[in-house]
Amino acid sequence: MTRTDDLSINPESSCLDAYRSSIATQISSSLGIPLSTAYEGVDYGKKGIDFTVAIPRFRLKEKPAILADKVVSEFTPNEYLQSITRDGIFIHYICHTTNLIRTVLKQIYTLSKPTGSHPHGSYGCNNSGSGKQIVIEFSSPNIAKPFHAGHLRSTIIGTFLANLFDANGWKTIRLNYLGDWGKQYGLLAIGFQRYGSEEKLMDNAILHLFEVYVRVNKDVENEKENNPNKFSPTNQEAKELFKKMEDNDKETLDLWKRFRDLSIVEYEKLYRRLNVRFDVYGGESLVKEDLIMDSLEKLISKNLLTKKTERESRIGAAALAAETISDDQDAGDDDQAPDALALDFDQYNLGKPVVQKGDGTTIYILRDIAGARQRYQLYKFDKMIYVIGDQQDLHVRQFFKALSLMEEPFADELEYVNFGKIHGMSSRKGEVKFLSDILDASKEAMLDQMKKNDEKMKDVTDPEYTSDEVGMTCVKIQDMSAKRAHAYTFDLQRMTSFEGDTGAYLQYAHVRLCSVQRKVALDGIISRDNPDLIDTTLLTEPKVRELVFALASYPDVVKTAMKNYEPSTIVSYCFKISHLVSSAWETLIVRGQETELAQARLYVFQCTRSVLASAMRLLSLTPLDRM
Image 1 (cartoon, rainbow, N blue to C red):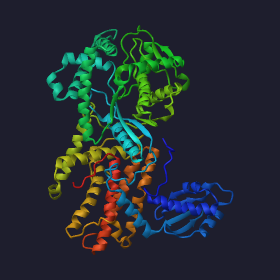
Image 2: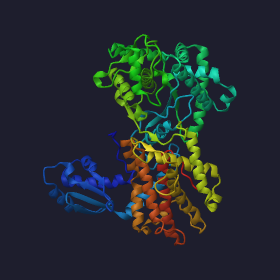
Image 3: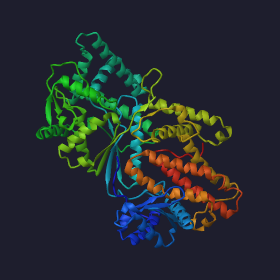
Image 4: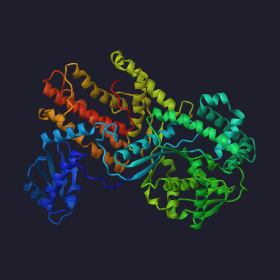
């Protein structure tokens, strides 16, 4: 999905905007086109070239070659632009090196200082979303079930998007829409009556409830296998219990609420470990009943519903089955049940999704419709994003279409950010592998790596914390390195390697930048608080210019990520900076140098560390100082 939101031009937050504006001014004057049109035509150049303008993109009457000659002949160097060259119909610009290095580093240094609204500094941020509010729904596990690998991508990508919108000036509401309603909770209640243990519940609520849920589902399977009509008394009892929940039976709801509250407590522990937070814990259960019924009535008044037999409902539900969808679409056992109500979307090639079962209980799609309306009433959002796996593409298209046909005022402001599956995250027995186990395995792998270097281990104050952070960095970077639409295979050994573009390598790059200041302090070299006192004219190495220009592009990288919603955009940038630093170590030596030169080079590494740390935080990573 490509966004076209207007991202403002502001040299105060991005030095390169001033350089582009200077190019645009000269292009506008030479070609007689609007300044805004000229600015849009200024692109980054290839290696060794700062900016490039392709003359044909302006679609002018004269031949591009003639226009290119005119631009070159009228070019005048200034404080921003040093030189210009022509390559056919392309015009290449080189920025004034001395001024570029001075202004970029000063801006990074200044904007990287903590403020009240930006505790880690504001470099890379902008105010393009000022005054706008967005709701982002992500993670959304089912209560009473362990947080497993299937929820990992939604959590990581959703957190990244929330951080990204924050960086672009939006007011962001992070919403965890829990799967906390449906027949499966009637089934869980029955299972707890049969197999539950108060002691185990208090020890590890989610794990015990999951064990109970698995056992009671086995009961259902056995009952169906031993009954010629495939009828399960337990399943029927669960339906009746869920009906009690919808009818507000106090005793049933009290037990359900206890399961929900205990689940949230356990989830919050894992979210803290993942460096993830939420502003709101919502859920299907919290959608107002009157709004659900009002939504149903509105669908009826718009002639959007049709009757559907229970058998048809089961066939349709099977096509939508997905891990994060609630189990309340279960087929049931009685073909003679009253007809269900379904959305008639055949003309849109979207099928006929059921919104209400024949027994009067509601289906999650109706609660999604009502839930979206409820959020708009509450937040009056300018945009709402759903971060959901691509297994639910059809479901999302169906309920977005329903809201559109209902003529809801916010229907056009809904966006769906999907992602592919993770393969290779099952245990040896073929069962689901829980995320806490995956994080523990990553942590242990990194701790083993760290123990191989006794000297470095002595510098690490808390090896357990450090190995956990590096392990989580590895998990997240493997997830976000590729385009989110792509599925990928989980590979613990590859993921935790220090070789190649891995999370461990990224943390090492940041740690190495932190170590520079500690080491030069031993020689009496300290950084200066006033960047104007640093002689940046001493920074003449080509590697410095290449690195500084890359640092200057960070605000644009953030804007690009806002257009494509791709974490990989930021991940690629992090590795680009890390590689540039790695290639610069041999020439940009700080220790043993004359004081002024040492301070200038240290200044470059300090600014680089600030930018790399900012990009890592955008990815929800915690940059480490030692490892």
